[in-house]
Length: 281
Length: 286
Image (cartoon, rainbow over the protein chains, first blue to last red):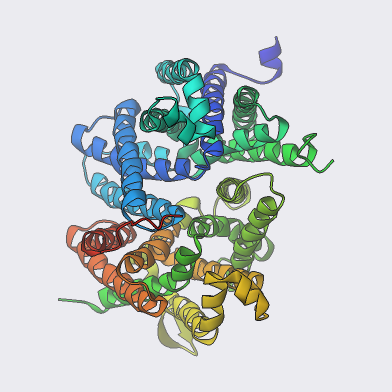
């Protein structure tokens, strides 16, 4: 059989499914973040999720990763809201605001983590998993949750496709059409937070932002149409995730998150150099 | 009672905070604050590559390798931006995770049995810093970290004192700077070199995320309170030092992560400044 020839066992197959779903979803959503010039927002949100995850653990003592990730999603949304508030209230530049939220939330997360270590039932591995990502522990029910969230994200994208397109390219025109830019912005941000939340388990806090930007950045080089870009980014994201997980599953001592990032960066490099209209060739 | 050990940790924390916020002021003013995030992650690659060559974790060559990795990150990012194919934020977000990932893969392939892991780079451990001591001719000259960070502080301080005027002009008016024969590019890369050296010197003690917190948050706090760069420099030094002191005190009181506590404390000072400041957004948003 094909699978046995590729050296894929049941666990690896499961992980491949999860990672591919994540890659496809993150790639598609990343296109919107890239075009809105919010590439680093993913980095900030994934760091900001840490205190939420740990706080959830401290409150519920749950070991179910999805319960903890709910806390992460809430903290991520709080982080985005604080960023928007600071943008509106101060004259600080956007990147400084990103940096403040990212580092202060993460610092708070570290403090809470050392508190959580003292809880007798605590399991350090559970929390460390979110820092660096570990797909080896993915269970069949996790795949179901990831698939549900991915489906939800794609359903919203398809339903609000027109609105999102208009908003990404021309927020003022969106307003003229009688649509509320704030609502579209909120929807896109919530989707982004959801995508990050399903990715934290797989690639971890530091590398999650690449999952969002790299496929979109590569896709942008090949096309000038949004629908093609989103499709291509989803494809690239899925490929990078599959390649990364496969290599880390077959070769010893290659961590999954970094392997996916290297694969995704390879696709970006290839696209930057070789894409027909925008590339050097 | 305060012991000698606590005094040393506190002193390292204060020095590290001040060292970080000096280049941070200019990063925040130039709108390239996220470069500190990129550089502080990318140095892992430099350290690992250098370690694989010389197989010695205490060599000062590691610091040089790490600084080079920091500058290389900036160069690659600038190259992508100049090709006009991707915007600045995307370029930053693509380059440093790649460097960090390659570093992590190299560690897990070749250096698994050495005390060199991504945990260490990300989180740091200030509480252990005083145990790595510098001995000169048998004399105990204090913790290594103190000397390394002190050197970085001297370099930063000297650079800003010597080239204050040039830094100001290249930050606020690159065109005038070019006309008066200061190359903005030279000072941009000098600032990035300074950021790399600072990140490398301090991350061992405090971890890369706290480097980001200390580089951005105290200068941003000062930015809310003043409109003069000299005042901003002094205020951010004050905020950084106070965050270090209160952060460390809170951490030892509650027995939690020192680096995390100091980073959270910079956030507390930022919030205080936010509610005190008159830096309201008027109609001058460009």
